[in-house]
Image (cartoon, rainbow, N blue to C red; front, side, top):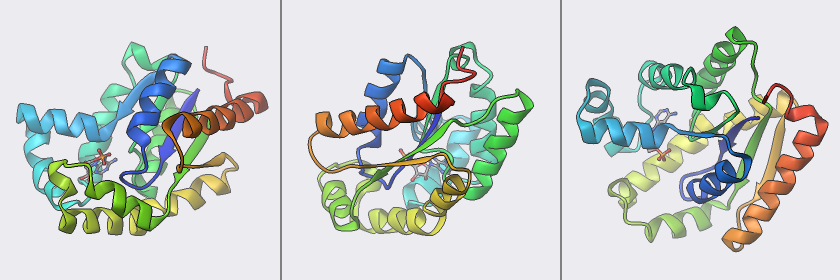
Length: 194
Ligand code: AMP
């Protein structure tokens, strides 16, 4: 199964992703993790991405798409992939669809983790990552609202959007996530995940 996970920063995507990839035994493709690793190793991509990340802005599409394009051809992605934090805008979503179509594959579901804006701000305030500084948080939220949220319409239009509420305990949220995944898999969403 190939799943796109969408939600604002601080929604708990990271935690839920870890659990979900374990449960479904699929690859976890987090562009945020890949970019942080590239930054830490000071690769060319990492150096180019740095300033955007520090400012809470999206790293240019070409850089991110190159990373993803390389990764999805790796054998661990054959069984299925959870795309976490990617795509972040409609352009990336279109490019992802095209990349997958070349391999006769498609996204089976987009999973939205929905959290109120006030709650997001409250959660991010307690996290302590360098890009969680208030000014950067505000910018990341603006980026989410302006560029990433339109993705929900993109996937809704394709009839593959499932929304789960992100409030409550980690276990409660995970139960909702699994229910949404089961629902989708039951409709043939697991097709092609051999
Ligand atoms: P994340 O851990 O997913 O919140 O990502 C941290 C930062 O990495 C973001 O604020 C962006 O600067 C950058 N980033 C991660 N994924 C993407 C993406 N798909 N497109 C552009 N920038 C990204």
